[in-house]
Length: 147
Image: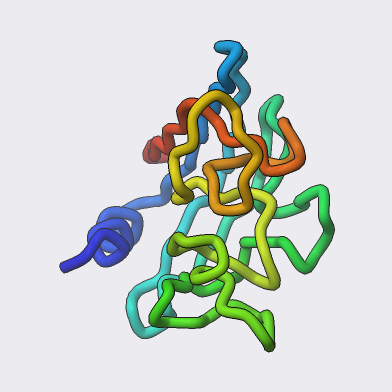
């Protein structure tokens, strides 16, 4: 069983919310919390369902700053060998070097490459609503909690 199978098994047992904690290289922190966090099974390509944003980081998942083509909610998980995004010319997971719930692209890439000192990189770990311009964050944690 892989990570997304494990995640689906846990999330399907109860209703969960998700909290994402972000830290930049100046030790400033922000958070985003979602009241609903569901990941489908393999037959749905781990379809992501999220709702109910609160926080101070800005909503880079449901209402991202770049618009609807960058929404992750309702998307299937893509990897370099499983192109489930909606971009017709590019496998975004290959382009971003990470598996994630991409539509046409993303404003939140929490599985990206770890770059130091806040480098700007399309393949980095970023949350565009807060830092913009693909600023590579120092730390990110994703935590689930039953509701």
